[in-house]
Length: 349
Ligand SMILES: NC(=O)c1ccc[n+]([C@@H]2O[C@H](COP(=O)([O-])OP(=O)(O)OC[C@H]3O[C@@H](n4cnc5c(N)ncnc54)[C@H](OP(=O)(O)O)[C@@H]3O)[C@@H](O)[C@H]2O)c1
Image (cartoon, rainbow, N blue to C red):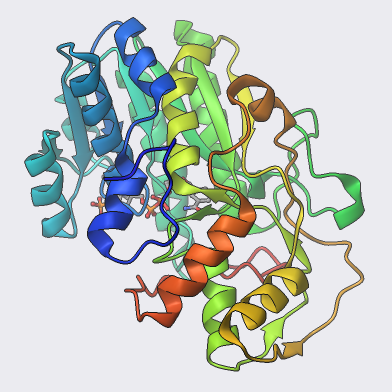
């Protein structure tokens, strides 16, 4: 079993990885003791939701209190539903595009909203807008008496240079392309219902979670391992260990506000792609190859100083993540085969 005080040297199995991602931290356990009401996670069936839901259940168990955790999704992957039920999450199958199905959901005091659609937007723009804007309309209306933490994205910001220090929450959104525009639409729908009903909300602008089976470090690491060239068109990025991102999201239930609070969630570093590829090469005992070039002026970079001031620095450092990721790739650890496409700078996903 993994605990934040005792992080393992390496993560060798999926069971160990899932345990690390879903072991509650002390602050999360304490939060559960203070938090009034039950919790619902909407869009729990995705890459981040499962471990977030299980961490919440475990925190409640350790806190020794009674609180229900509901998990809502279509459960396109049926095994996910079983995994959540086995862990103590009460699952509800629901297509949130259907407003009647949303209207039938239990009214729960605390909501974590994780629904989103990104890849495949090109050619299916309408579905992306429906998912990222119409669902927030249904949810914002239905859960008007709740507090809602909304997963958003750093892609709502303009592309900036590596020297700018990342966009802070004060930078005005300027989303490029239909995916990012629809994500701003998601924020705007929640803000609209928050204004109408006074619902306290926190909008989390996340940049790249890492869970070893997917993520930006995984994508770069695999290329280095296979001696494929690493693209330097985007030269810098931000990442955060998925458990830290999920932990901060749950703790944001205490920071929901009206008008909505905005918070960037990511790691503290502006990470260099070249540095990451060279570190992987060292760990693999290979030579990195590169392609592409950039003047370093067009990247999605966020400044997470406010989140660090609220919650402290992430529990897993970049170097630890690189070591874990390298060992995971070398030992043939499973990949979700869901590339981040971090190199995209024209807003087309
Ligand atoms: N992962 C990252 O690095 C990252 C970075 C920036 C922002 N974010 C945002 O953070 C959130 C969570 O990330 P993630 O990586 O876990 O996303 P994800 O893997 O895309 O998961 C979102 C889940 O929402 C569910 N969903 C979609 N449409 C639905 C519908 N009509 N009704 C019910 N459920 C629906 C889907 O599960 P079912 O198929 O089971 O319904 C889907 O797997 C997303 O909003 C994402 O945009 C993530």
